[in-house]
Image 1 (cartoon, rainbow, N blue to C red):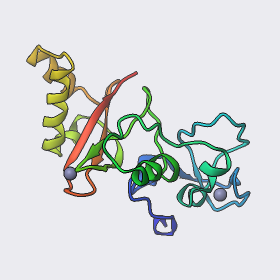
Image 2: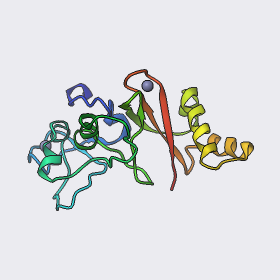
Image 3: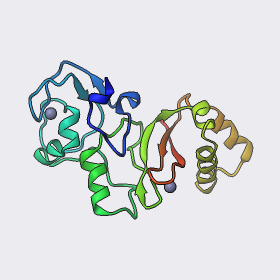
Image 4: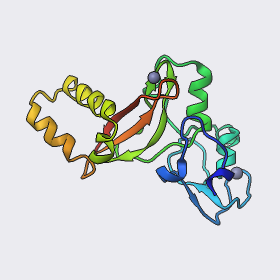
Length: 177
Ligand SMILES: [Zn+2]
Ligand SMILES: [Zn+2]
């Protein structure tokens, strides 16, 4: 079924991540009931009476019509303006406790996979190592406490998992309530 949906280079399976769901709702942009609706973040100063279908995200019409963005550009450093616009204006965002942001690898935006706990993260050792490194730099100096925190991801705090579109490396950041 998901093969009917438009392809999103930077959010390859928005059904799995929960950002797009099956719904009978009509789209606030094209007024069609496509069977699918977007459920996550959209930032605009305008009033939007409803939610969007995946097609109005993919072709940029929702972002253009309501002068909005699905994702803040925070974190998207060192990528071209074209990539920046594709992520912020033509890619489904995702819900999180803190302000969501996007990760970058190989000078390209990474593809968002989803919110994960420790076991899914441990299945991608390079993402776990990178997260451990980032948290140490961020002030987690007690190794035992850090491992304790990491092993409990999925309970309260979670990890947002991405995959580099160029080299395939997985990377993540921590989101907590
Ligand atoms: Zn639409
Ligand atoms: Zn890479």
